[in-house]
Length: 206
Image (tube, rainbow, N blue to C red; front, side, top):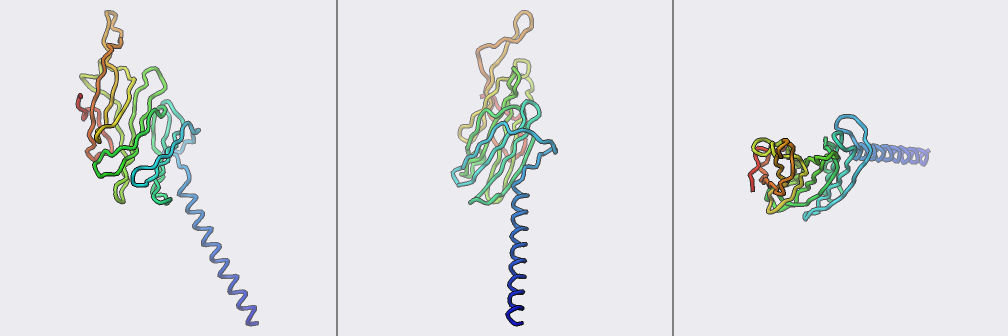
């Protein structure tokens, strides 16, 4: 009887441990799952994984495209998932960067997209990991005067010394009021100031 009781106790403990492990696995699977920001499922168009100078891993999965896309970014430290977030993102991924834009010595994760039409309008997105905090940034593509009248997309982005630069060709009007490429480019700089959305009006002409 004594041995039977011991056996039953052992089996009970094993069952509880098994249930506990299953619960942990379920929570892990739930944390890793893709949850669309708007509940809409999209096909994967692009994936990339990069590791910054502090060992933080960023996993980008871009789904959809054109004006109906989304970008899922998973952030890991020492293999542990810190964040799994999906957000709206338009176009196709054109460039991925690891650059420090907030001056904390740790490279931040940035990428930009271009719309798939002839204008190829650019959008820049970023994820900043600093200490125990994760921030997301976005550079708005909506131009104002004096740029807007001479703008027709074809944007690209680059980062130098912690500054984000948006570059695009300047268009002029011909006699028929049609836009033609002047052969010149505008470059606008955007220093990071801690906000999640960087408005186009905050840019400074280089």
